[in-house]
Amino acid sequence: MNIVILLGAPGSGKGTVAGRLAAEHSNLKHVSSGDLLRGAVAKGTAAGKEAGAYMEAGKLVPDALIATMIKDVVAETTGDVTMLLDGFPRNLAQAKILDEMGAPVTHAVLIDVPDDIIQDRIAGRRTCPKCKAGYHVKNLPPKVDGICDVCGTALTIRKDDNPDTVKDRLVVYHQQTEPLIAYYRDKGILRTVDGTTGVDNVATAFLEAI
Ligand code: AMP
Image (cartoon, rainbow, N blue to C red):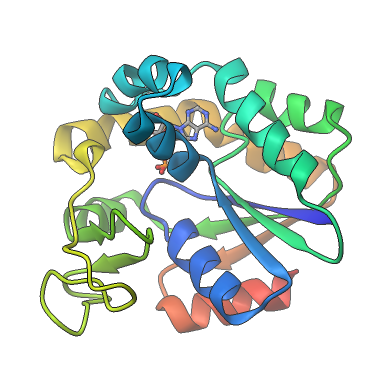
């Protein structure tokens, strides 16, 4: 098993690209820290109860809480698999936790999208609550309005995708997550992909980068 980290602002397309690549390539596994947390919130686990308030406010959940979840997924992933790790690490402390786990990180790919485009993307974002497929009302609409192409479930808007929370999430990204770009550049494993060229092109560029 090896790990490729996806870096990029909320709404940069990390989940869409990783989800698509994992659906197309059986050796790629998409692991989203946000999905793990939303799953825990939905199930009402102790971790989910603790995480919910941070998530609704657009803040990062405590490092130890998410690191425990990631550690479990890393431990259970074996064989000839590349894990596309989306949303973790989110700050330098988490990057160091990942290093201390001995996780075999081969690349960190930054999906680069300017903030003004991000606001518009998140405003149109729709998600399938069941299979987690992602859509956008303009850029990536489902075949039937409001319905997931994959499993037929009614699409929803994430609670933390409202404009005020998005602003807070972008501040958190610039302050806490962006320093990871230099961290992985210094390790010589940073790759950058232009995230504004459409899902197909971004997915192709991503594969080329790794
Ligand atoms: P995402 O789906 O990646 O946009 O994550 C949604 C929310 O989950 C974030 O705004 C945070 O509240 C929380 N979250 C996801 N990943 C992490 C992480 N690695 N560290 C802390 N909080 C996280």
